[in-house]
Image (tube, rainbow over all chains, first blue to last red; front, top):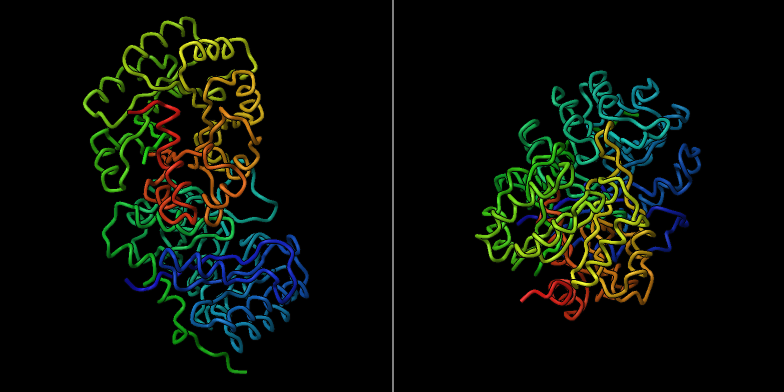
Length: 264
Length: 250
C-alpha cells in the first residue's frame, strides 16, 4: 500500500525554542509504525497563545520550515497565519514560507472568525498559488472560543472564495450538521482529524460529500496515530475509498506541480 | 482479548441500533476479540432499565462469547429484586450511570447497592460519560461523573472491583496508586501511543481493554492495543488477564 499522508499534525503544542529541543524523530517513528510516511506539520500554534504577534507567527513558521527542510521526504507543512495582522506581513510571510520556501499550504486557527473580510487577501493569494487553506472548525456544545469558526462560518468562507481549496478540520467535531453545511461547496473538503473515533462519521461524510472530499488527519500531538487511522480503516466503505482518504486526495492537494509561483 | 465496554441498542444521537449481536460477534472475529461484556444502551435513558435489559439478556442467550451486564438505577424502588433477578439470568457485573440517573455516588442508595455487591462479590462498572461533552446535544448536556467520587467509592468498598469506563487520558493517569480494586478502560483515552503512555504512569494491572462499541469505531480502539509499544506482559494483562480475573470469566 502506498504511504499514508497525515494532513493534520502539530509538533509540538507548548513552549519550545525556535530550534525545537523536542525532536520530531520519535513522532516520525510512531507514524511509520502505522504506515504514515508523510506528516504535514501545521505549526506549534498555541506556543504564544491566541492572536500571536507577527514576530511570534514568524517564529512558529520558522520552526516548521526548519523541520520540513531537514526531512523533505517525510515532512511537509503549512504556513500558519493570524489574519488579525497587517496585510503586508501576511503577504510577505506567504512568500517566505510558500513561494520561496518549502511549505505547501496555509493554516488558519481561532484568531479571527472566518466570516471576517480580513481573510480575503489570504484566500485570494491561496487561490492564485493553488495551495489549500486548512481551517479549524468545530460545533462545540460547551461554547465556542471567542473568534473560533464553526462549519456555518466555513460555508460562508467557501461561498466568498469558490476558487480557493478549503480543508475544514475535524470531522468528529463538526458532526453531521457540519458535513451538511459544506456539502454544496465543491471547493471544500473535510479532514478526519481530532475528536473521539465516533463510529459512522466517515461513512456519513462519504455518502454526503463523496470520498474525494475527505482527507485523513490525526491532530497529533493530542491524538494517537493508530486510533485516528482506525477511524478510516475501520469504516464500512470500499477499500478504494479508504485509499483516496488516506493518501490519494492529500497527494493531489499537496502536489507541488499544482502550485503556481507569483510573479514578483 | 476481552472487551469490557460494549453496548447494544438505540441511542438518539447516533446510529447505534444497526449493530446487532450477530454483527458484533462477526466484528469480534475480524478484530481477534474473544469475548465482551455487553450492556443495554437503552437502559441509560429508559425510565426502568429492567425492560431493555430483559430484552438484551434474552438476545445474548444465543451468543456465549457475549456476557450480559445489568444496568442498575439504585434510586428506583425494588433495585434489590432487579439485581437478584438478573444475576440469576447470568449478569456478570453491574453498570451504573449516576449522571444520567441523577444521583451522587455519595448518596445512601448507591452505597446500599455497593454493600450488596460486596456481599455477592459482583464487580461494578461506572460510566463517567457516554459522549465527549463538546459533542452533546445542546438541550441534553449531562455533566460527567466526578472521578474523585468514584475514587472515594472504591476506597469505601475495597473488596468490590470498581471499573471506570470512558475516562479521558488525563483522568486515568490521575488514578491514585495502590488502590487495588480500581480499574479503568481505555475507550476515551488518547495520546500519542496511548497505552504506552498510560502504563508509564498507571500499572497495567489496573487497565482493561474497553472500546465503547458501537459509539466508537472498534478498529480505532483495537489499534490502540495493536500498535502499543508495551511489553507482552502488559499487553496480556490489559487485553484479557485483568478482565478474566475481575469478572471471573472462564
